[in-house]
Image (cartoon, rainbow, N blue to C red):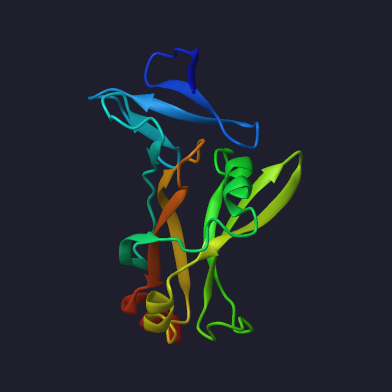
Length: 178
């Protein structure tokens, strides 16, 4: 499943062939390695080769609402394949988008993935925040998210994606009103 691509000084890059046939690249890090921001990685001593994490930062204008929130609906409409196609690209980002016309939940919040493929911006829905979280966030005006972990799909497995949900801080909102 995993094959060695090339060894850099540290960390090294490995690849995973996914059901889409695309190679998903990520870093394999050893204890003591400097882990870059906004890159998927796993530690070499982890038992599962399919669990990847990402460290991200955000400005102090944002505060964390939830450090690890499951993205739901990731198995519908080919969303796991959409993630595999764009999730390892250098400019991959996630964001939240309200879905007021959702027939199942008027507070629904989509998790959107974006990346540049062959010079064009690709925007894909990767899933939703849970109904409970969307209800709690219904009055928040500005939302964002960062990817935090993914369990890559492989034959017989379940795909899973988690994000950190961010809301604008009260201090930022007060400054903006002035």
